[in-house]
Length: 250
Image (cartoon, rainbow, N blue to C red; front, side, top):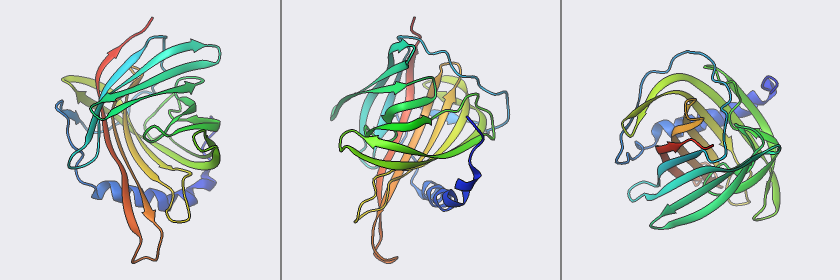
């Protein structure tokens, strides 16, 4: 991809500041039964694009919420691979969760259709660079991308910013991985007359050894519209995804 369009930075700065402040002020994310730890981020070699295979499968323990979080097991599996890219099936199963969606990735890291928050599917034009390989510490990209929500048949524009924070060691389920941290700030296209657009603040720990993330922390919020005294912040997501198993296909 070409170098980021710096003309977007002035627009993004208030969003970055607000989201980062919200993340810093949020309560500590609830820990699952498996403990996850990280070290201190640093420089290292660039991570090349993974070689996904048919049958590659990542399984996560997931939760969303605060005092009584919803919990489920999430499985992401490559179910098709060909000239037009990859189909990724995402299955969520839990006591109160039962859903499946199919995402289309023309190549690893490049999302044509899929979800950025919860299971809200969107198609993107141009393709959305979720991961811009090769990944290197200090790398960043920002863009506006057109989206179509197939559930409502509405179109909009999503504001997307990513900064690669550096190499780290992340331990989940007793296994330690060499990971690259990615801070993602996203403004969705769901503003209405009574509320602002949803603002997402996500931190991904990407492990090149498995071609995917081992830990994801996702927060999101929007504001009910009003004057400065009556505007109310609504927390829309407070989720954690922790890898429990990776199986190589092929």
